[in-house]
Each structure stands twice: as C-alpha cells, then as structure tokens.
Length: 140
Image (cartoon, rainbow, N blue to C red):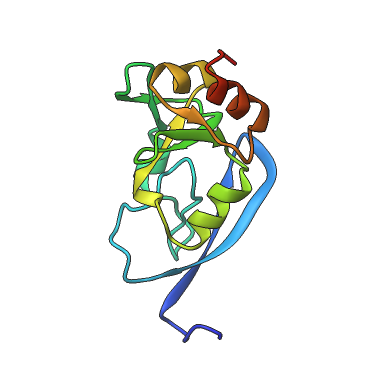
C-alpha cells in the first residue's frame, strides 16, 4: 500500500566505503531527530546542504567497547543489543534497517579485530565461515 504523501521521507542508505551498496528506505517523518548514524545515512536538508554533524566524521566503537570519533568510516557494522557484527552490506542488517529496526543500536567498527575485542560475534549470514569458527570456539 503506498504511503500517504507528506507522511514519509525517502532515504538512501549507503556507506562511502562500499560502492553499490544502497537501499531505498521509506522512513516516517515522526522519527525523533538524530536517530540515524551519519556513517550510515546520507542525510541532506531540503535546501541541499548537509547537516554539520556529518562533517565532523564518524563514531566508531573501539576494542574497549567505548565510542570514539574518526575521520575514516568503519568497515564493519554491528548491533549493540545482540552483540553481533557483520559486513556493511549484510542483507539481514539492511533488511532490518529498511524496516526501521535497530537503527538506534547500530554501531560501527574500524576492522574485524576491533569488533571481536569489543565482545561482538560474527553474523551467520554475511560471515558464515567466521560464525562457524566462533561457534566451535576457534579464533577466526
């Protein structure tokens, strides 16, 4: 069923490090501001200018589990509540984001070693070999 005009906004979910990984998402306009991560969503005002927050860089999670600012975008994404990490183009993560789920709990990591050190496990869908090794208790 098509959404009513003026009640939703179209957003293209993308990450600058992955070319071609884009998903068109319809998001209700009633969402609270600041719900999307600047590394995940290319936000643009109606006048064509980008918000100041996007110019400051990216918020990544370090090996100690604490956030820090970086000029370089993260290479892996994660879900804070489930303590799971995966590729930024993971079909499962993009499907949940398109539905509006877990966007507030989305985190980003500079590399895989940082995600593992922070206590996150690999995604079974986008990182199946690493997930099998994790389940067996072997380092990936």
